[in-house]
Length: 252
Image (cartoon, rainbow, N blue to C red; front, side, top):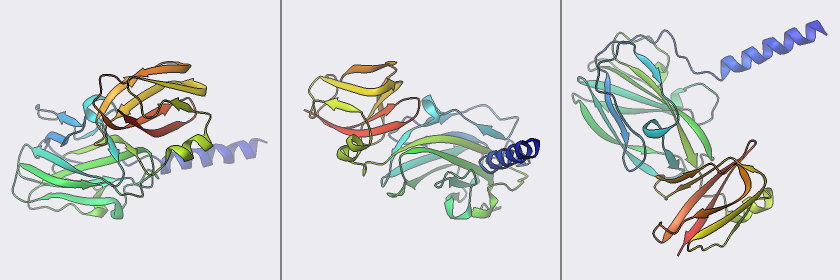
């Protein structure tokens, strides 16, 4: 029994290690540091105007350091840095805790301190959370897909967590899989939501991924007031202790 427990604990530790991105021995320096990282037209708008004294940071999935993005859509990504920089970006598409070369995008490779580029979210990406890493390095150096964990003598490394919503999951499919019920659809004012599990949170997004409503009802039945929203299509995200469900609602 003791041997089995030892093996189990070792395997658990190994799995945890595999699911944790490298966060130490990354090196760096105050220049070039990030001043702004922003995904336009979303809640992600992170401004840090003071010079950093440590060069790795992980930010919470809340407020201006996160956003909800839609699979298959493209977004405008704006960055500014304290001096000319090259910038690389990794998105952990397969959620294995490793930033791999095929998950890399070169964001900036020019003598600029401000840059706007396109951030593409693959249409095949399922709903869920997504870890994303930005790294800067002094201009004249390079950042490639194999540098997610390299020790740099300049720049800064930042990790964020985003939420991805895949609209390809239809309302019909969701109703088959879950006891979740919602009505009416289309809705004019009150959307009634019922589930067999306690609903911990309800979030409403427009199709650009902007968070519009964030509620924590803490009960199995609730009513969502959508009367203040303009007519259009909205994504509703329902969270319980064991699952997250997404569906679309038409507002008349």
